[in-house]
Image 1: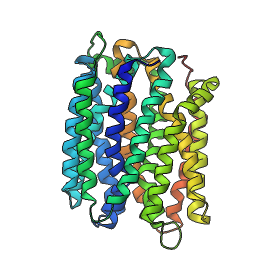
Image 2: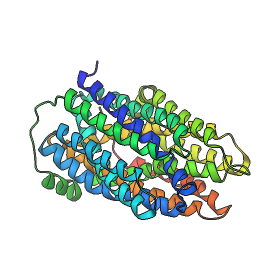
Image 3: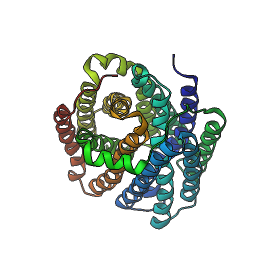
Image 4: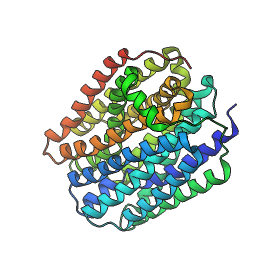
Length: 387
């Protein structure tokens, strides 16, 4: 049985990701097709979220180790809500980018504190399953958000961002009222980060690999919806179909989190990450075939869902196991910085490909297939850690 506080984090994460589901998958479609920005501009704007997220993740790791996880999570919710308000009022590239910068800061603060809180509340033998549970909350929230967001993606699209902001505020309220932290020794984040950067060669290899994994997620979340809308078939897929496909993707991801973790336990943590890399490659190959040969989009998305389910809880568990307990927030901040780097690079690269004519635009997925195969090979350089 999990610590009761894990369920507080589960509910809070579900609500925060519900709002994110409204905006994450529809921002490229809305700001390209309704506001009039180019795909590259939208990619740069979304990449700004990751840029400010770097500062947020460093501060979030430092703050969670120094002051505790709860105050950092509440501050993250407030800043994220402010960023959503900015996006609701944006109508050009500058305001779109500024809104993303504020939102990225809040999200950056959120992740290391949240991941450290999960590790604090679980025994090593439960940790991978606990991460799978909380990641399933993310996926369920995203799935519901994608489904409901399809209703507002037309003329009412600004309500997507308003509802997103309200969901962050509700998350902050739940954490403020419901989360009680265990007593923990504090440490200096600057000393801990320096130790990691200078001494931990294993983590350095992992940082490169994990950045590529998050690069894959960035393509799935930002480039793929626009690709399905503008490049599949003669007129692209309808908003209804895209909504259905991505609802399937996130709900399958949620449903598979715990089963994939349990079935892959004999492979170990590194073996599970390798399994994820093979599924990423197969899924991106399926998407390439969708654009070129009308291959069923749901099949490629289902493969990507398996890849995501294998990756998310396993990566967090591996870093939490590697970290000294007094520097857990620091290590998970480094882990979270990989997300900033992946999302900083991912949307601009995907947007650049999708601004090219065919068949060059389809080359994005071939490039990602080759990258996934390379990651699977390089994972053998990482040592196994035992939960």
